[in-house]
Length: 292
Image 1: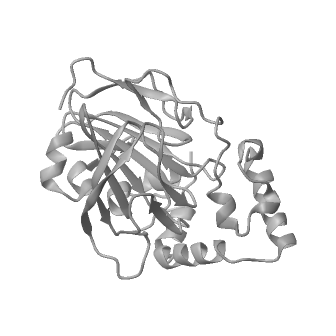
Image 2: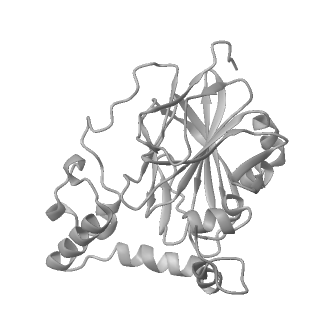
């Protein structure tokens, strides 16, 4: 349990985060991560990070000496066979490497952030008309730790014809933030990909966080965490076709994804809170009778 300051209800880190200019700080971190520093310094920094967070470099596509910036290392690609996809074509794949947070049913448009904390689907999607589509369905929250692979892939086969971007705060999505910041995932900036499948639509919400320089996607040039950014609902001129397990985007420094499925579309797998999951692992499966 996180210790609290005498007379206050939250841990000291919460009050530090409260006064920190979180968005500006995160933009600065993104800028620094893109700086081309001397090779010896960059290599030493990467190896220190690898040692502290126990990063598995054996599965990375590039050698440490090939990265030109810290951000290139952080958003590193994996070797082609590093993450085999579950062979059952009806399975729902984990879109990332990470740790399962909360998961379960969406009831009265409410999702669970942590024990004793709920938040509204309408606030998360910032779209009252769309949120009704997912009421009665299920959600899965997956947290990406610093050592994880930080590219985001599709959990299903389908196409992206629209997405939404909602600027917001950049609170930490660590346990401190999840347990002490009400409505955290609906307060932080987020980019939501809507995936049209032959079993109906599902959604993948990418949530920004402190130190996340940017969120990028493969199907559009929009980049998150820009000064003066505004809410956007964007329809693509040409739908982006994606196979299950194909890349959709990336986090430049870590964060959280929330998978959303409408009522009757999928059955959750046997998940546990804090369970480690890998990209391509089955986290659920389409219901036999689910349809558009």
